[in-house]
Structure formats: structure tokens, C-alpha cells
Image (cartoon, rainbow, N blue to C red):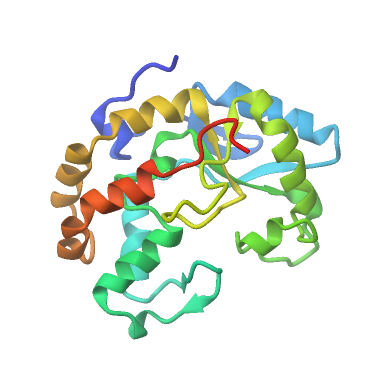
Length: 231
């Protein structure tokens, strides 16, 4: 069982629970490091160069992502991964659109250092720009082989896909892995009241719309995940 994170760590306002790795370059919860490196080594034996294109993100980084999407400075996508224009959305619709692919600051699993977005560097042709869209992880996609390997092997190392299927909240993210021994206790520690207090004290864009829907958001987008060993 992982040591419990405090309120600042759970909401991404501290980084005392994570350490930075150089090879591969990423920032992880100290209890997830050995398992991730073991999984990377096992994948390498199959010719897969497992790498994290996103790992720990603090509150301010997640806030910047959210606010940029709110202002239309970063792309928004519908549930099928197709681009949608921010200018065409009412503010309440924008909240929904952002949450489909990005977490609330304070409510991101990436705050915990347990969750990573993974790619296969060995599969990348020169100049390819990774988009982290489902088509890339489909059987015929550029990361199709990686996806199949993860499905067969990630559980051995304590990892699972929290957004494996569509549960009406976050759109399926086959690239998103979570280290269960850390993330499960962290989710239990992130109460609705803690999330609300964190957001009330923040400069999140669209704050009135977010706070008005927070109980629903908490249930649909934080709690509605695929459990470990599902599928």
C-alpha cells in the first residue's frame, strides 16, 4: 500500500511525492518508478521503445492547459477525436468539450505521478508528430503493436488503463496508463470538498460554470473509470 499523499500532493500543488528520471525522461511518483522501468525493459525485449510523452503535471500546468482551451488557444475535440471550434460553443458546452480530453486542474490523475501517456519511440518515422488520438492506437495505427503489448502485459507491472472504455466521462484514451498501487488510494483521497476548495481558490477560466456542475463532473469525469484488471 502506498503512503498516503497529502492534500497539496493529491491536487497537484506540491511535487514532494515525485522524482525525475533521465532515461526515459519523465517524472513519476517514487513508488511507481521501479515498476515502470521493469515494464519498459520487458517491452524493449519485444522491440518496443516504451516512453512517456506526459507524466506528472502540477496544478499550474494543468490550469494553463485548461485556460488555453477555454480561450480557444489550444484545440478542442469531440468524443470521436474530430476538431471543434471554441467560438461555436456556449460556455457550458465548452466545459464539456474540455473535460472530454483534459482534466480539471486539481482533479487530474497526472498530479499523482502515477499516470503516464505512453508511446513507442521505435515506431515513429522521421518527422512524425504524435497527436495522442485513438486512431494511432488502433490495430492498424502507428502504435497498434504497442497497444496490443500493453493489453497483454501491463497488468503484470501494476498498470491499467483507467479510460479503456467510454463510461460517459473522459473519452477512451488507450495511451493513458495508471499505476494502481498509487492511483487507487489517491483517488480515494481526492474528495469533492477538497476539489471544490482548490478550484474556488484558483484562477480557472469559466469558474462559475465549473463549480455549478462540480458534483456531476466529479462523478462522471473522476470516479467513472475502468478498474484495474478490467476487460
